[in-house]
Image (cartoon, rainbow, N blue to C red):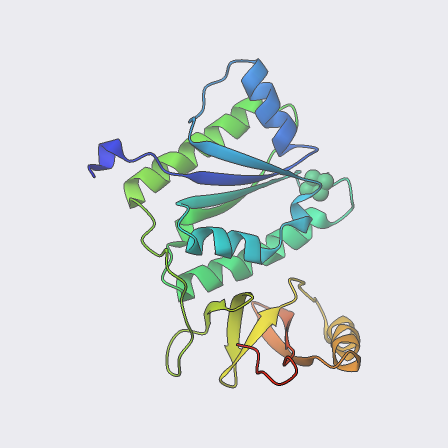
Length: 215
Ligand code: FES
């Protein structure tokens, strides 16, 4: 396929209060943006689980964007702060899995910023066109000596001590809150690990099914 024929498949998770409204306004205002963009409305950017992004890219989509309200404008207080912290981990995981970090973007937008929305998706589409099709479309399995991140039976996993653990999707800013959360997992018979990442703390969990080890 010639690069000029390539129409990137871009998935956008859009906060209902900003990105979705901005996309709607762009449509009613007849502001042009690529027709290959697909959107999913979410209540808040903070509810987009990192697995959704990683799985979409591992599944063969060419790019994923999350649109959230501007800093200080989240209707649920700090959902966009959580989205920002998660985006840093998502980027690290993508790089580890051999996926270009440019295939993912988190963008702040207001409901009235239809032009900003259209420019963001057009810019991302152009970036993806230059990158070419996403070649990482097969599940990545974790084997000793290979990258830390990959896909397990139930989704996106990280290897800890040669076992597959699943990120709970939260980002903890301090040890007290992380310890409180991990205690709840341990009390519920999960195996759980604290993993430092970019100055934050993440929790990865796993639980073995009766008579069968979880992948
Ligand atoms: Fe829009 Fe939280 S409500 S990012």
